[in-house]
Length: 114
Figure 1 (cartoon, rainbow, N blue to C red):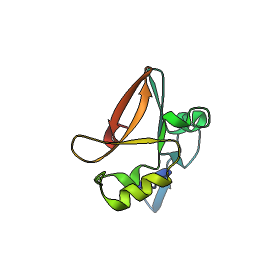
Figure 2: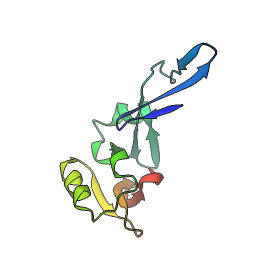
Figure 3: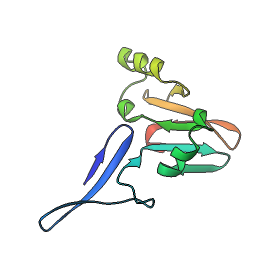
């Protein structure tokens, strides 16, 4: 099973007699829920977390709260005003998206694309 939090995720498997939490490539139980764009590269999880401070404008995290939400909803607008460092955009379908720099060009991405 997967426990998706806003900042982290935990992956576990059921075994005889209990549940075992799986470790990631860095032997940690928590997996960072973030993606960072740098040049033509996309970094996920731990890698994104390690470069987030130097690349915060192109690091996307805490987006779970916007999944399935329309850009124009008052609650969504209020929540977006509290997020620092990200540029939000309205996608053609009316849902929330985020604008990042990818290969030196601004690119609008829907949340599933992140």
